[in-house]
Structures are given as structure tokens and as C-alpha cells.
Image 1 (cartoon, rainbow, N blue to C red):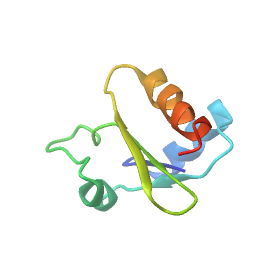
Image 2: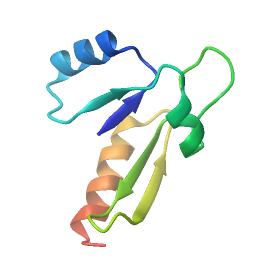
Image 3: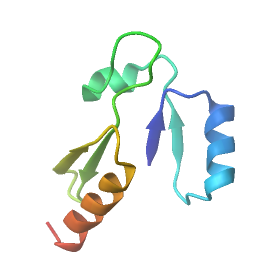
Image 4: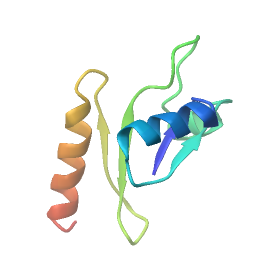
Length: 84
């Protein structure tokens, strides 16, 4: 699942352009960002982070990168393939 501060219509357009195949949630008031410690002040969106959560609901890894988006997918897949 993906969460962004973008409005629902922007999320929908992003999903339609990229055919992600997973739910995107809208967090325009940034309440979820605050809960996960990824909020920032001002008009910029939240800090980019990926939380890899196992089927047992345990946090396996937090991936943070503001500039290299591929890092998020690559590292998340590595953790999941390792079967942690």
C-alpha cells in the first residue's frame, strides 16, 4: 500500500499512469505522516520512507531515501526475499 499527502484525484491519476497494482491512500492532513515520523514542516510532502511489514505484522525494515526511488523497491524486495 502507498500513502501520500496528495488528494484522492491525484492519487488516482498517478495510479492510472503507472498501473501500480496496489492501493494508494490519501493523507492530505498528514496525520499518518505524523504517526510514522515522516512529516515535515511547510508545503513539502512528507519524507519518503518505505516500511516493510511482515505477515506477522512485525516491522522488518524502514527504508529512507529522498533521491533514489529505486532504493525503496530494491531493498524492500531484498528483505522480503530473505524471508525475514
